Image (tube, rainbow, N blue to C red; front, top):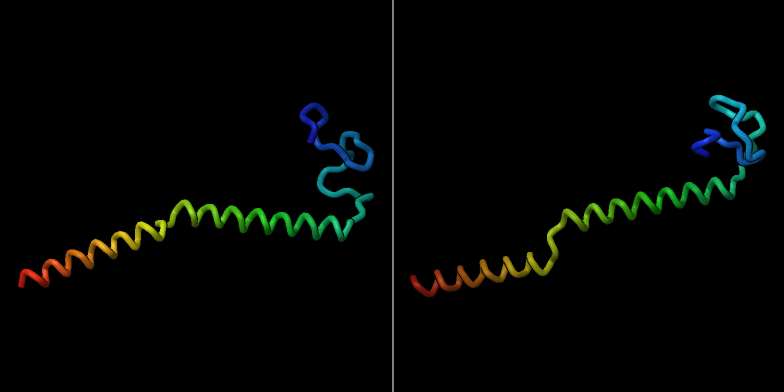
Amino acid sequence: MDLKKGLVCRLTNEQATFETTCPDFLKDDIKAEKVKQEAIYRTQNEATEIVKENSTPWKTILFVIFIIIKILLRLNRNH
């Protein structure tokens, strides 16, 4: 996409002469697979980042469990 020209054809490097599809387009299967794999990789990385942002670190979970055990042990000693 060229902001001055609009949609640009990679074959001619000129403004596209088509609306939705290009009759001269030849699919490169190797490039298409690479683009697909890159999209999958990006999606997986984005999902991993979302999980990391939304999950509680394991150290915090262990700390909370430790505190609960300590409280239960103290309550048990007092009875």
